[in-house]
Length: 113
Length: 112
Image (cartoon, rainbow over all chains, first blue to last red; front, top):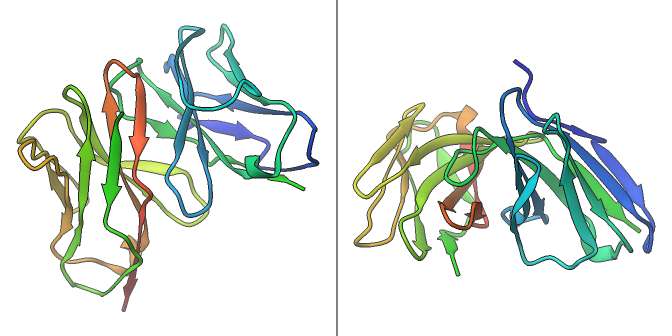
């Protein structure tokens, strides 16, 4: 079975631009979470979606938004990019919301110049 | 809020040495605890988990016991291999928050 897939793998953007990151969960998984991993730190929770509804939001500004589609895939959007948004963005899927081991994709490396 | 504190790295060991990576947590309620591993160039993979106090999670020779009295979940392995070289993350998941909180990771390098 295919794992969690993310696209693109790498992305370079300029300050002020907008970016859309995409994620396809493992087949049968209905929960998708997004994390930001800055070099040398652990992943920081951004959003969780379950059954197309937002179930949790981390301490990130409103420039960050996400949505989940009927096929359970998800997009993370970031507006007005800042240099500090440069990070590895990880998508994780789970069988259900709440306490459930996460299955991570390999991430999208975003560089903002 | 919830938090996870891991021992600082990097940790360098010789093959067949004993490994301990310390992890302590702060949480309201009764979280589940996890260890994830990240190999170079890859995403995080679940290594083991424990869902309630005194549970022991184990996988690939690694073990960790959920200690509620000391709020700890230390990772151990009796004999490490070069292939165990990776970054290890301790994490907790809170039912009500529906998210996971991660430590900053501990880099392990095993030398032959």
